[in-house]
Length: 315
Image (cartoon, rainbow, N blue to C red):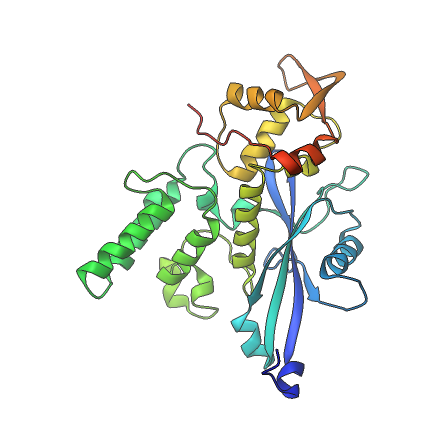
């Protein structure tokens, strides 16, 4: 900071950007603004003791919802907005977990399924068709456009490892790397901006977002997918009482992968993460299911020892 002069210091704008996540009806949801084109964002103010306190107060005022788990993600330099505003704009991003429904059980406006923005990330029913039909061919074209055979090979190796092609395993945590690869290959609209209709046929399905918000969302998704494997943050997204099926579906929704039912239940029981409430609920036309609640005292235990969720493929 010491190398900046006063005019440079005053030309920096800091915005808070929130990746606010809920799971509703077995679907991962994010709060958006601007008809789904942006994440909640606003200028940072210094009337709170910390950035996190500022974010909590700002989001809770907007949504009328208390936040559970909150974690800073990353500070992004938004090149597009910097050019538009004539100043250096940085986005200080946070991941936060909450509930979509209000106290009366009504949905609030602005919530969107996060797979609307990243349809290739939902592997709950196997590899999404868009990967074989659109992404792999586009990345082949991009790879072949490299300057020499070594560069072509390196590009395709990166593409196949990132997207689980050519016998490579799919890694659900590589959300940001996949988005940045597609950006580099020029097949997402953010790589070109508005007004380039000539590229429209080449662009992949998946809703675009303004500024660098889809990149920030990818970062939040990746962080949460990693976090649920070793910290019990998933319970921040659950109602007070839930069935083990609801818990499994919530983990699957976030991870974008199907889980083996018996392995999942065995691991939950082994780690004593939940306890029975003594109540039952009917699930569809099936048998009544036991209701459970999160053992709050395991939060401290697991913060020390960690917990592991069975993010293995279904068989």
